[in-house]
Every structure is written in C-alpha cells, then in structure tokens.
Amino acid sequence: MDRIRIVGGERLEGTISISGAKNAALPLMIASLLTSDTLTLKNVPRLADVTLLARILGNHGVDITVAGKRAGQRNGDGQTVKLTAEEIVDTTAPYEMVARMRASFWVLAPLLARCGEAKVSLPGGCAIGTRPVDLHLAALKALGAQIDLEGGYVIARAPKGLTGNRVPLAKVSVGATHNSLMAAVLARGDTIIENAAREPEVADLALCLVEMGAKIDGIGTSTLLVEGVTSLHGAEHTVLPDRIETGTYAMAAAITGGEVFLDGARADLLQEALQLLRATGVEIVESPSGIKVSRNGGGLSAVSVETQPFPGFPTDLQAQLMALMCMAKGTSQVRETIFENRFMHVQELARLGARIELKGDTALVTGVNDLRGAQVMATDLRASVSLIIAGLAAQGETLIGRVYHLDRGFERIEEKLGQCGAHIERLSG
Ligand code: EPU
Image 1 (cartoon, rainbow, N blue to C red):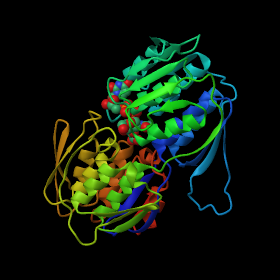
Image 2 (cartoon, rainbow, N blue to C red; image 1 turned 45 degrees about the vertical axis):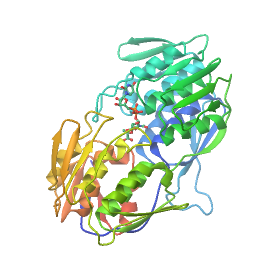
Image 3 (cartoon, rainbow, N blue to C red; image 1 turned 90 degrees about the vertical axis):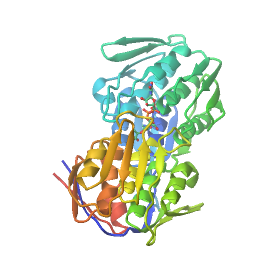
C-alpha cells in the first residue's frame, strides 16, 4: 500500500491548477445513462473514483472513450471523456460495485427512467456516518415508482414510465436531488423538487441535463421545476472547477504562511469558506482567472464554524479547516451538522500534537505553536488531506498510510504541492 511522506516546514509558493470537480463529474457521467446519444464531458479529473465509475457504467452498457492529448494542452489538463449508452444491457448495479463507491447508487434514477426498472445494491454504511437512502426512495415513489427492498437491493419498477409530481425532500440532500432530477427529466408531466440541494454540483448536473434537452427552471435555487420530455439527446459539457480542492489548497497555503495562486478556481463557489479564511487572517484576492491566497508573516486567529448545506461552509472542508485551526491563536469551535461521524481525523491530528477536544458534534481546537511529524493513517478522503495540511506545517517527517483514500478525490496532489516547494513524496508498496 502506498504511503505519503512529508517533511514539513516549507512555505508554499507558486501556482496550483484546480481540477474539475469530482462531485460534479460523477453525477454528470451517470447522466449519460439517460440518452442513447454521446455525452461529451470536458475537464474530467483523473481520479480513482472516476475510473471506478467508468467501470460500473461499462457494466450497464456505456461505451467510454478518453480523448488523447491535443495540441496546446498541458500535462494535467482535465480529460475529455465521451460516454455513449446506446443500449442499456444490464439494469443491475451489484453490491461489489456500489459498496466501493456510494455515488454509484445514483444510477438508480436514470436506469429506472430510461428502462422502467433498476436493481441497485444498497450502499451500506461508510466511515463518515450511516448515510441512509430514504430520501432517494421517497422521491422515486412520489414519481410513481414501485420500490421493493430485497436481499440488500433496491428494486425499482415503473413499467409504464414515471409521472411528474411534487417531490418534497425532507432534508437537504445532494444525492437525492441528483436522483430526483435524473428521474424527473424523463417523467410524464411536471415535477417540483422542493428543498433541493443548492450545491454548485447539482446546478452543474441540471445545466448539463438542459444541454441534453431537459426542461428545468430554478437551477441553483431550492425549488427545481422540471417539465418532463420523452427523450434526451447528446451534448458537450465542461465540468466546473473543484471548490473543495480549491479550499483545501487555500488552507494548505495558509498553514505554511505561503502565497499560492489557485489557477482556474471560481471564488463564487466557496464564498463562505473564503470569508472564514479572511477571518483567520489570510489574505484572499479573487480574480476571474483564479484566487490568490497569502499569509505573509501574520498569525492565524481562531474561528468558529458549523458545516451547512451550500451556500454554507461545506462539510467536505471541515477536516481541512480543523487542521489549519490546530495552529491558530486561541480556541476554535468546529461543529459538524451534516454527518454524525465525521471526526475520524481528530485522533490522527492529535498524533501530530494537535489539541482537540470532542463534545458531541463539536470539536474544540486549541491552537499550538508547533505540530510535530508522526506516522498517521488516512480514514476517508477529506480526513486524509487534512493530515497532509497538518504535515506540511509540522516539524520533521509525517508518514501517511492508506493513501488510496486520497487518490479517490485529489488529482496528482504530491505533484501540485511539490511544485510549490513542499517536500512531499509517494512511497510505493
Ligand atoms: N441523508 C438522509 N437520507 C438520504 C440521503 C441523505 O438522511 O436518503 C442525509 C445524510 O445522511 C447526510 C445528509 O442527508 O446527513 C446529507 O447527505 P447528502 O445526501 O447530501 O450526501 P451525498 O449526496 O451522499 C454528497 C457528496 C459528499 C458530501 C455531501 C454533502 C458526492 C459524490 N458526495 O454526498 O462528498 O459530503 O454530498 O455535501 O457528491 C466527499 O466528496 O468527500 C463527500 C463525502
């Protein structure tokens, strides 16, 4: 198993190019199931989750090709992926696949909408919480699907097609909004999705569906109005930049007291996180081509934050912010309201010398003057990157195990940080 070795203490300085968003690319790839034409996605990140989803979609009959390098393209520019689901050959998503990546559960809606049936394994628990699927199933039932649970599988049937309806989502859920949208676009009649997630990745999916011929109003708001159409067609869509990767590198630059330009980042996708960084004493300059983050000499101040659905502070940046606050002056309060068990990084950060006290859903982080390198273990994607952030600032060597978590969501992280002066390397085997 690969490990990452960091020798901390270097100030990050330079430019980091921001990749396409993992959490947009995955539902966009799944949307290819809705049409027999080709969906071309540009700026797709090179990530383990993207590769795994390509294999899962391949099982349903989707042909996938990745375009080769073009003139003028730089190494590391996003990939162009063409997905064609001319014929769906299998409407079952087996346990072995769905258990490895929760987002693959979202094939449920497009398979059901296009084929009138789908059998998809329940995703099961995961390191950050129980993560049920009740909202997904309630939404599909509202659109007329018959849902049965059998042997750990969801079996959804709508032999005469889905019918538009009111879909009130009891809780804000990114995945349930994706599934509701992909079901509603091919349903007969009108659907109103209420309490929809407003995350930019939901809007990106909705925009792509519109490019494919869907009729959707209210994109970017919590009420999505969908007028069903009988079929969708091919389209070309560019995946939006990854706001979580952006926030992660902003915090990495901040903890090292460095100066980094995040090339291609879109500030409008993470205003709450940028405001919070400003409150800690970090200078942020937004421009149309990216975001400059710097902390030249000044200290970091403690802040209090709670995770919230978009436009609030994202749960996917909670672990990274906590790493940053380990070196701030004073005590920060970090409350996690989205997932009940997303504090796995706390005990690993403590190994690096962090002072964190957990009280239910809140972590009290008291800043220390120095972190010290140690051997630590990645437990999930965002937790593992918080250890990298802390390791960059820690004195001496930090060795991070189980880095496959990291490869699921961060493209070429050693290279991107290494180019800015970090001493970071991957140790294979
Ligand atoms: N929930 C339910 N019932 C449901 C669905 C969700 O109770 O049927 C609850 C969840 O347990 C959670 C809350 O609703 O407490 C929000 O979960 P949501 O459905 O929004 O999460 P998701 O769609 O499964 C996506 C991202 C996550 C991100 C969350 C929240 C992808 C592939 N995943 O998950 O990203 O944390 O939204 O923003 O888009 C990550 O990238 O590391 C990651 C975990």
